[in-house]
Image (cartoon, helix red, strand yellow):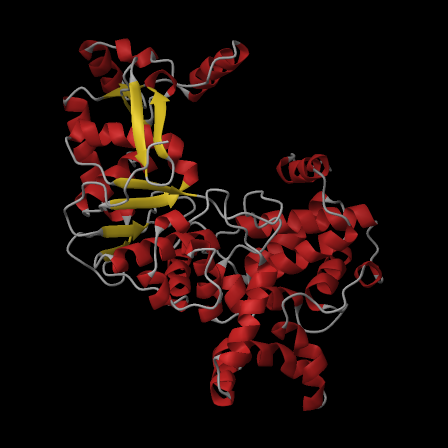
Length: 509
């Protein structure tokens, strides 16, 4: 395989970026990608940008954006340009750049590199089903390519909904130059005619990503390997616009110990979880840095400046770095013991949980439930834990009226609904448990008890909905996931059957 230089023929100042979507909790994979882009830019005296890709209007929230910015800053990363610091290439939120995308989409249409597609979802689904039945790769069949100008004018005058798709050559090969993988060849015959502009007038990732990277002067795009198959479309867009493409590096995804893709179903994946669980930012930064260090280096403790100075993209293994939480625990322990004085340790503990912001809601929940202040220890200990210490099946089943499989179903349904909550608040939490009781045809109190035990470690104590809201989605997910590990994880068949209960029509009275 032909080696590709990461500097390629770039003569402009190095500019990299990270572009998270604010549609949930900030993922450790985002931090890993951000760290690589940051280290590369700073090693070469360049600039690192943060851009918010929030065109998914249904799922993007200001709360999620705030968490992303706070979590990356907690890790010790900063950016030269971004939505919170400004810069000469803004706006840095895609939702504020609609006019830019529309103008570039119109340019592609005028130049004959894109076309309007009026196919209905039903027609598209039927076409893809036929292709799959014929054992052909499913992709757009080009039905609207043959529309004349008169056809298009008539459909537009009738208000028929449409998207805009890019044109793809019918023959030839696209060669993607990747710094980790060398040359990757894609036959245009298997590349889909990607939607560039949705029917709601918002761009897809592909158009917005290319336009933004060019206008923001990004020289090196270092992103996850899941985008390799999109590279031919992106390079074709650069060609259509007449722009110089950036150097591409597709990074291996973080993996679980069994080499499967890192998933919150098997490991906590939110940066905020590790912050809430009491890890030091230096340890997490160091841990992620091990994925880009040379394996031959002896001491695994390192600094951000060392990671910058010694950065070499070819140190990254294509096999996929394993997110080994036991290694993170070991590193965190070393930092706690070796890097902090007693006063610094105390300051870290205060910043973690012994501060007014975290303690005030706990005090509000506990005050009415104690007779002496020494009762606080047992009542509130669960607010200062990761998993509940000493949890067992017997403890989870203590006094629970639900059958064990129904209890497992309740946890599974609760987890799914918690994950889908846009805003994390008491009202949504209560609605989730009420809905869970409803679909399981159980009394609310019989559903609340097993959640109480899994989350607080006992059958009574502080108000459950308030406790769940204060602990946060990440800790709750980990405690319910642990309960499922003990009771028996849901099989794929069970998970589907239980999930289907949430979408089933209400039972007749």
